[in-house]
Length: 165
Image (cartoon, rainbow, N blue to C red; front, side, top):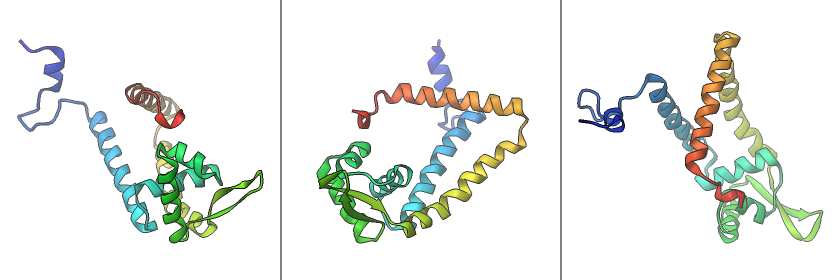
């Protein structure tokens, strides 16, 4: 006799796929296409995944010191310096003196790079948000509640974010 978990994780018609509902499959597909979008953006901006993540932090937070950027990325300061060097080399960021610390520098995103990244990101973000217009207020609340629960569940399984230390 199969346990509940074995039954759930069993396969449909021997195809090797777990027996899950369409919404769960679509969530997995969303995660895959989101990763593909990020890879595509990285290729367009001529940066690797770490450098793209660094740019995202700089675009969302503004100028950051190398140590803070390293902390947010969960990498060593030496690795962050290498990433910053690559971003400087392709013209996405500059190093500028930190006005609050004469010995420090800030990594500042270039406006042209910001505009280039946002030109790709904003239509997608606005388009995703506009999809909610196809649902009633009650349906939107249900969607939001479902996604909040999924995010919370993922966070439980991730555990403490090592970058938060």
